[in-house]
Image (tube, rainbow, N blue to C red):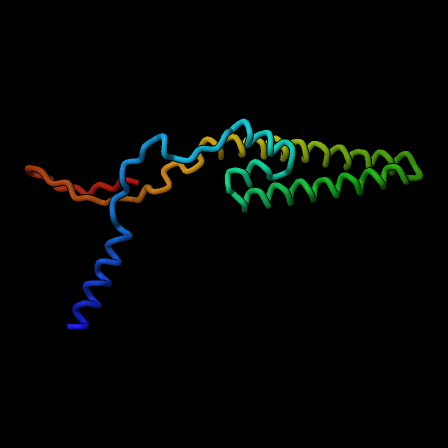
Length: 145
């Protein structure tokens, strides 16, 4: 008797996770403001990603911009301390390169925050579904994802 109760309990527990997702009310789905996400991403590296709760991307963008900023400042100091014109041109070229990379990563960060805010909680409950379709003379396996 005890084993039957345990087995029924385990069966019900495993089936609870497979319940079909209920129809969502569009007003009940939490939203994030794309404008605020872009503003936060423009003000703080990874701020828009943190706002949309994508913390891995927030850390990646903050780390990338931090590294690029460090390299820019290092080349800037080396350019100011250079003794020859050739050294100055070499460090100035590297400094410009890091400046453009920084601007590019910053713009990509803002674009990613904008898209992330629009797609926040988009179809989070969606699960793949496999079903068997049968008719006169045919049988098919349909997969919805």
